[in-house]
Structure formats: C-alpha cells, structure tokens
Image (cartoon, rainbow, N blue to C red; front, side, top):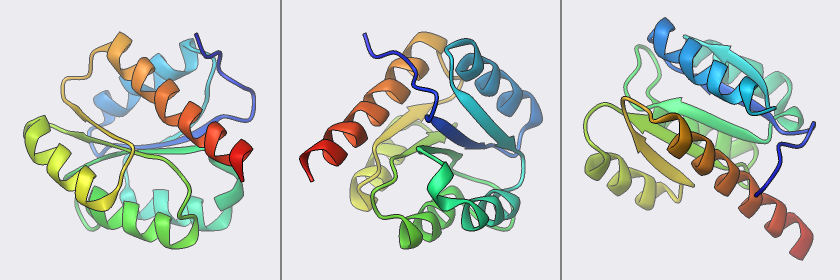
Length: 135
C-alpha cells in the first residue's frame, strides 16, 4: 500500500462546497496536504503561482467560468507531467472518453466512494513517482 508522502500536496477544485469539503476531508484523513477551492479560476491562479508545489490536480468536469477540461489543459500547459483526476456527475463513460483523449490519469463518477477515491489518488501519484524515477 502506498503511504501518503509529505510532499504530496493536492489541488482540489469543485464548485459544490459540500463536495469539495467531503473530498478534502477524505484526502486529509489519508495523510495528504490539500488546497481546496470552489472556483476553477482561483484554482488556476493558485497553480500558476505555485506550480511546483502541487503533486496532483483533482477537478470537477463542469464548473462556471472555466471547465475542468479547460483547467486541466491550462495546468498541463505549465506542467505536462502533473497527474489530473477528473470527477463528473454526468457518468464515468463521458468522463473516461474525455480523460482518455486528454491523457488524464483517471475519471471518477459522483458521488465519490471514499475507498475508490483514495485508491485512485494513490494510483495517480504512484505513476508520477515511477515516471520521475525513470527519467
């Protein structure tokens, strides 16, 4: 089992405050440091100011002003190696199609199951660690 590493700081964005709070709580209880926001524009600004401080982006698909896809594209424009997990309430099939096309790490349907959520996060972070070690 992969243990959360202190440097694994996660940027989490969901425009629904309750969803953001629950996912943030899941992550914190699993040992991750989390920066959470309900605004995709704010998330992008935080990332641009501190791009090297985040190990993972978790984003909702549909949000006002800047969709999760647009946020992922902008983030990947700065850090192509950062894993991105896309969350959607529209069905994982739609999300997986987008995630696959954009080469994102994973797609999760809402509501998010805690165990599956944490396993997905660990998987995304471990792939990144493996990629860093092999370069």
